[in-house]
Length: 530
Image 1 (cartoon, rainbow, N blue to C red):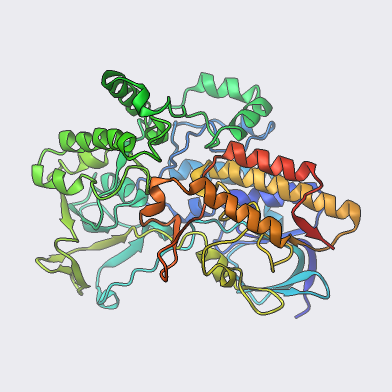
Image 2: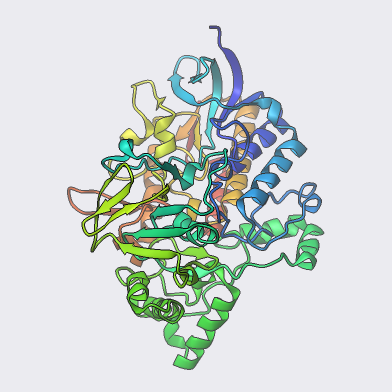
């Protein structure tokens, strides 16, 4: 089969892919995108489980585009999956990107051809194309962890994953449902499933901190105000550490009296969401400040859950708050006061196997009609590895990351020319507003490609020294974090010596944008062109 040549090949059609196709075609490039799903949406196409909802306010979890923003009206402060997916379809249609996207098509390989300065990309449909630039918009939380429980193949009921919820109807009413996993997806799914299930049994390995979204109808007056000054709003959130307007830490915890500390905690709790991650400016680095916040949340669990044994199991004590991703929920702890919701602590009563009828633990043999796996993702590297990208030496990008990711700006990695990793490790990534992260990265890439075109360059990759310096800077920014010493998907652990690498850039989106602007203003210093 003859291949077709493109300027850019985009992998993924979530928010990042939609915007990349839009922006790069606007720049006059010939673009093709490949998406494994039948339609746009990315993570919001696949994560359609009951209760799925974003944890960034909808004022900012959207494209900061002056034409698009005023033409859409959100219903809720924290919109649910159907509304977000509808919005992404609206953006794709408004920008006319669909003709550039091949749906139901997975990238199966991308081989760098050094003589041509191009990638040869092959797909599950048998199509072969070449692209000067390869842009991975496949997401950092998109490759689901596969359930690996013995006996699953013999189970006679239905099992599903929150991360790839089926598009056909999954019957939950009147069913006996098991939920395995209590991370962000699990805590959202449990109260939603419990509304009409006969029973929901939650299998918890680690008690996670979860705080209320305090969701409600969108403040339409605030949205209309922002719609009238989108460019100004965009600049403001680009220069906020998280890409939103949530209040920052009020100051070190020790600078407040105990009464003032409690008042601040109550104020942030009432606002809801990730504001609990930044009550005090030192809660991420000082265990005493962190414990103030953690104790406040723990007390809420104990006050909310009526059964003292269940409340004790649900109370997180094994790690500082915010050192794993903070869950944001709507009625999670309250659900355990319902008669149809049970809890099993799998540390005390481990799962032994899946049986044809359900789940056998050490102490129980339970029957279920539906098993829901909420096991999370192979973060940062899963989707990248699945695309089977190879350089001229046959290496994958992650082959050079044995001791943790090495990137320049989280965007490129040496040895893989013309490969761009949107929201990759070494960028703010999952620590900030992911739609804004993607927009900022794509805009930077577009400027870089324009720079190359003006000078006749066809190849770019990081300079070794610049990549080393950026990798060291990312590590230094995270060096005093409490979360660096806690097992979580953001930390790479070198098993030989126990050294740890925090993968996202923790200094904030605002600092990151300033670093990118400085690089661009200096003719993209740190990038080697030819």
